[in-house]
Image (cartoon, rainbow, N blue to C red; front, side):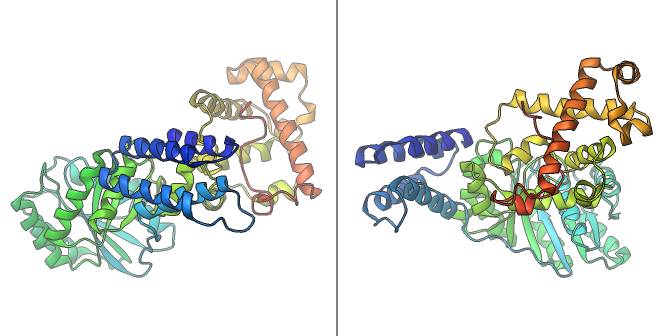
Length: 440
């Protein structure tokens, strides 16, 4: 869906004049793309008719070309079918109940939700009441240890009793997340169990966890769970790997249940508040600098790297090493590129660049303190020794030194203020990022 929508936008920007025939062709392409992404056919028809009507009948705003206006219309209409307003999470003490069917990823979602609130200075605890799935308690314990929150619960056959006993042991953390059991379908016994859990827990939020790959079937699930237990929101998983994410997200919108969060990968940090505007911006290839800056800030906080290392201290290989470490903490390179509106970079090129980053770190681990702090001393004999010690080739060592020199030159330009006139550089100035030339 992403590539198709960007192809459509590319056609619009390349068009000399947008007449009625071209607009109709573009609208038909949008229809096919949305239907392929499993968006409800009736909804697709309504949206495409609105796009065509607005594109042909609306008066152009002052200073805006017809091409720019059409792109804005497409953007607005896609945002509309995916939910419009951004969800606002509760940031005070509250209890969360997660519900859903087997395979939706509820237990993994506990860890992601917990990390989200922990990163915002709140304490978190979790309880599992899943008595159906073997080792569910052990799995959540492992997640709790990795992310850093206590897990209550245990083995048994009575989910309600487990919850009651766990609530007695609860230490009063700000956020309490309860993971309920799933089933193959929304059966009477599942509804009865969730209702009993809800009655005892009195949750402030009841989130349905669904996978994006179920497409528009999400509407039926959301409606059924909402009618049964009353939902406050939906969490959609696998939005990064499913071409049907648009279908799942729009289906929740149709069911009248807001999408609260989305999971964009397997790691705990691959999780965010759902924002239709941001989602559509990525879909259409517009840079998401705001999200990138948040990722950068988290990377800075989690690593020893500080932007001041770039601008105030001497820039050497030790600084370069910290820069690579901080970038690694920002997440997969593919996601960073998506935030910058460069998601179309070939997969092979991204993988090659990630491998370079790993290689460079291994090489620098084989250097002495003196070499890291004074790279200018690294000549032919030292290059041979470093290559042998790291198990890499001399060519790779020389490539590292070349990348370092490029980064050093870039930092000098930033210090001299040569990038002040470039949009976005004020926010990006001095932050850890990919060394220049890595995507070559």
